[in-house]
Amino acid sequence: LFGVAKTRTTAYHPQSDGLLERMNRTLLDLLATASIDHPDDWDAHLNRVLLDYWSSVHYTTGATPSRVIFGREMRLPVDLVYGLPENTPEESVGEYTQRLRQDLEQLYETVRGKAGRQQRRQ
Image 1 (cartoon, one colour):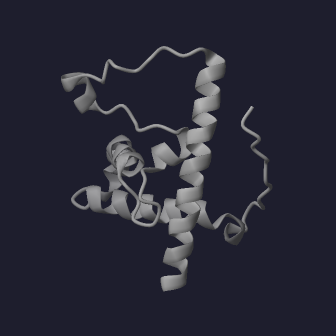
Image 2 (cartoon, one colour; image 1 turned 180 degrees about the horizontal axis):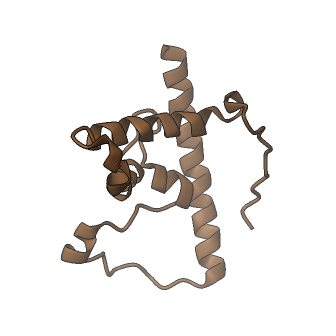
C-alpha cells in the first residue's frame, strides 16, 4: 500500500537503531524531569510525557513525530474544547490513501533535507 520495506535490527546492538535509541534517551530524560520529586512514580507520568513528545515540533525535522509517522497531527485534548475544522471534504479510501501517500512523500523529502543540513552543521 505505502511501499514500506522492513529493515532488520539486531537485539542488544543499539547502534543499529540510532534514531530509536535517541528517542528512548529523550523519553528517559523527559521522564526523569517529570518525576524529579518522586522518581519511583515515573510510570504515572508516562502518558503525559509521550503526549508531549509526539505532539512537539522536532528541531531538526520542523515537524512533530506524529506528523512524520502518521501523516497528520495528533488530536489533542484542546481539540475537544474548540473542535476540529469541519471543512474537510469526504474522500474515498483510495483518494485518502493516495493523498496521504503524497503528503508523506513530500514531508519525508522536507525532513531529509532539514536533517541533512543539520548534520552538516555539526
